[in-house]
Length: 478
Image 1 (cartoon, one colour):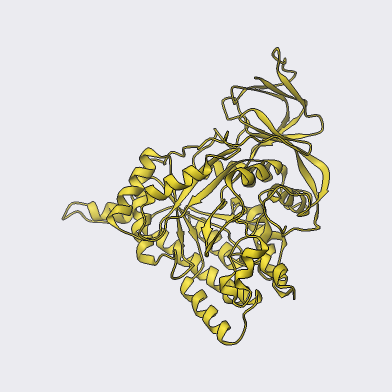
Image 2: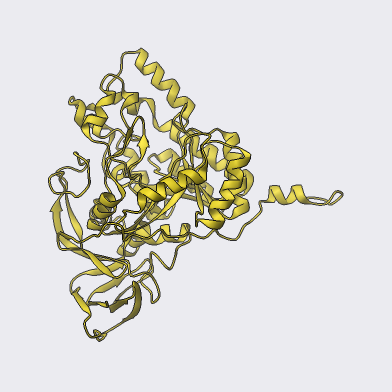
């Protein structure tokens, strides 16, 4: 069935113009003024609305097994909530247990994700190193459309990797044409601080932020950038939350290094004072890693987005309800780390970014969709409004407002970290695969229609270090 979007203002990462959009067979078939609606086509009137690429959230954790429990949001409920907020794709994470097969874990996550309502893909975490991991990275890139591998520098005793593992994994990814993602926190320092704080009798949620001060993120970001520079490898640093990490990325990019930074909207608008709430359940609901920071870091993050030092926005959507968070009532280190927000990301960024003058509409499109599609090599299939692209679009109402609340959200979690915040700028309609899945408050998602999206690797490259190592004996190396 055809779908004609009529009378809207198209906004892309490059420009803004008035045109109709005709979708058919899940693709954009035509863009232009005054297009004719084919017989039987559904027509959506978009007068007064902005027609933009659907949001892509490059960092989610649906139904993640973590810290002795499982995230409350599954792939159907999570992608449906995302659609209500204007998102048409997620990139989630396969996280194998240390020593486990990457391929087996990938197959498990693929099975869970078959219920998705919109398109999805996966990063795969490297949680150890062996000949098997080396081989399976190749299989994942060649046969399963994986072009990114995640590394946790935090969570000592669980999924944390050391510098040696990163050196091996980054080298292998470079050979394959893949990019490495990194959670940059010094896990040794965090573990040291946790032990120290507990010994001092600090057991509540406030201990979470105290054990992960900005310095542990700044150090880790600088260290992973140095490793990437040594190898000549690109690196993507997730959920940047501090001025220190933002500055490290900006310096690296100024040197010409392929370093990318991702920021979460919650770090842009919420500060560490939430951990001082005397109600345990409320304070624990905000426990995530990295934690919320002193307010002055927000200025640096917004500046990073505006300047291009930070390129993408994500949510790290990983929901745990109050009974799950209660596992850490007597010990903050046992509170499952994670917050929700996939439904609210784009409204938060429009209200506090575009309406506040920090971002232009085209920059909004770039940081919510297009840059992610480019970095992870699915552009222009995704993140673009061009003929031949997937018909994944959001019709954005820049004047509509709502008050965010757990009482009205579609996320499967009993708390909303933005509770009571009024935002202007909403998804009036969300279109996935050429079908309307959200329309003026009505959710129309269908379980299981989301597709797994292959993300091809870039052409394999070799760093200056590896080329020098291959040079014939006797050749002078400059």
